[in-house]
Length: 268
Image (spheres, rainbow, N blue to C red):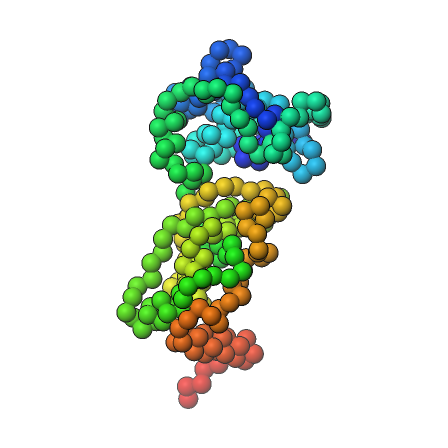
């Protein structure tokens, strides 16, 4: 029996919700209270969840709306849940597999609306290791190889911008999250090559802006249409530059010899 979930793991069973709780409070006003630290998430009544296939659904759609928004604003990580056996099929009115819900009318509140204008749909920001970052495309455009050559010559520094990503949370809790870069795949390519060439520290920490959190492979491909592992770019030969290719061949040859013979000291 599950007793804790992240709000983004739970889906709505209805296509739309009323903006007011049974006690007369608007859902947006409740969210305001959480964001302004006047109300704790744990003070809200526990929602019931039901597993259908690989997904979690709830009948408590208005409370889930508040929890999900609170998660987006960084005010909620996990919530307590009560697992129930089933939800009547007639109560499933969602047409998007519960990923979104329409609020019928004004949700109320003001603070969360103003704050939302500055969120730019970013769920949260965090720092992740370079090895957790994946490409969202098989190929990339432009000529980042020339930029990498410039860095190798010492004529430019490596810039590490905050990258917009989709976070994929594997169902196996022992697996690490993967972060697929939505834009700037060429910048990710430069960072990964720079690491391989010893220009930056191994497994550098990179700032990311998480735009969505996904829990299933099929949803991942709704965002990213032409990748599988996301570990490599397939058109490297077309990315321009010469010096990085030469340096990379030498590095790969050195790594190959090291794996065969170990770190031999050839100084007599």
